[in-house]
Length: 390
Ligand code: SF4
Image 1: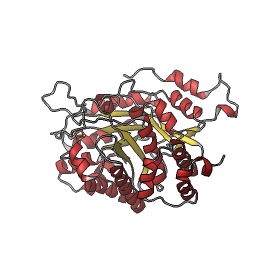
Image 2: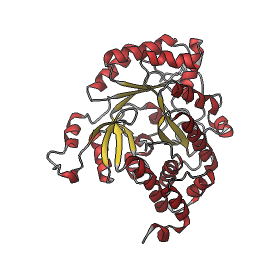
Image 3: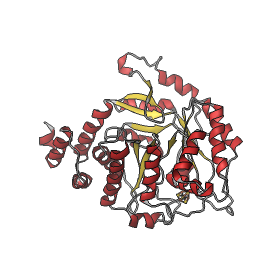
Image 4: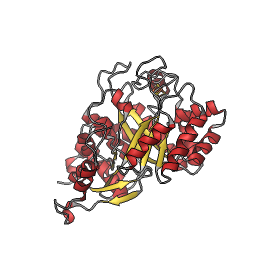
């Protein structure tokens, strides 16, 4: 039976995407409201395969949170601490370099570094951290800081945002992270992250970074107090900026974690909601090449399933991710590379190790292409990868 007969409710949108036409916000709302998850998956797969063929990627990386001290108190945040709190921390440059050195021995290509808005670390601390990491290994890609950290650094450095970004880049910054976007709509933002930067400021930091010829990623925190219309408004603003700059290399929808924070959420995101959000993002963001299923936030099993709902990336192997862990995500904070490869293969896609900018480092041969169980390279990687976090 063909798509039109099986999924009549969405057949006009399938045709639209098949013809390469851009869907509207009203179309996106229809997709969100549809209960035809399989039909949605088919349209998302169509959009995904056009950009990525059958490839699905992951990155070998490590997270470092340099400090959890923060001058703000966003309502949804379980990570931030004040100086009086016993479980607050901050690392010296030497400690960060040591963590990076350990991770390099596991084959990482990227460090993902974010922290709170520290009350008194000087700008030089951040510059020296970047320089020291580049001295350790100049090839290591440094993906650091959310937009609000950049605004905070500009404030403590008494420089413009553009000057701040230029200095950080000169010190070794390769990419901004996409964190902190939350939901752009003002009413929602002030309900969950009062005092944080506005949507305009978040977008402006990324715009300025892109205008320097650099790239970044983007996120959306969904499944708390926002409406479906708010999600679409968020996607619309990202799509508009991408039309202008083409500086986003990927989009990462983040399912809200309901524990250890102050927002009462009756219905946190289910598997259904997570998959449809990934699928609608893939279909609506037609100028984004990559959609990531963030396994830390949704678990590897659901992230694997998301590869059939428009995602083409599982994010990273990651060591020591504290932000989602402190928000209540249970389980390990490291995913052996072999398990990422296996998850991608099982989903019928070709595993690709990528770098920070989603560029291919290695395309794994499929087991269907003559790699036997004994010689499966994924097993060799597994043997090299520790089973627990440090
Ligand atoms: S979300 Fe970021 S800015 Fe807000 S309190 Fe947490 S660490 Fe601070």
